[in-house]
Length: 114
Length: 113
Image (cartoon, rainbow over all chains, first blue to last red; front, side):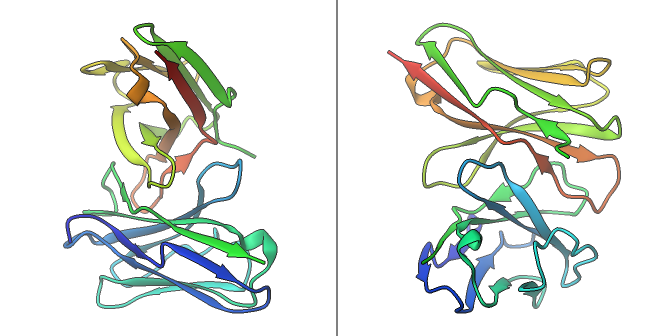
């Protein structure tokens, strides 16, 4: 596609449930990033992928968070046993290469945990 | 500890005037700086960037200034327009491959007509 595509755009889930957020990067972009923005906060880096590999997972807030990327394209961010503090906008971005200076964001997935 | 700081959460400016958004950083290893703009319910979009080897970069109404000795950069918008009203994020990249951009908390700019 022309831009980074994320789904769902909005998700309301009950506390304790698992959620999956999907990101489809710009075609041909090898690097993919996940960020989140909680209310009143900046963009918090979660994880990045180069191809299907995630060399640094230290940004993930807890072991309830995991992410994978298959075929060097689509990525899924999974949050298990969601908590209210997980409520945020989850933003995916991609860039042509890992050393690229500019990353391109999707519109985000708004997650609300009730 | 925040490595990229935007100390002003908001800024209000009249149309036609200059908007100056500020950003401070702590890590001298940052080699590239970017500004992103975000409208409500949209993802951030790239606005302008500057390499650490430069002190100024200009693109139309937008100019970014970098003061490495002070670890400070600023974004100037001249003249400001109501459509510039958005949240502006400062971001920095460490000087090595395999690192993601580190963002500040953002400054909300309101331009009144």
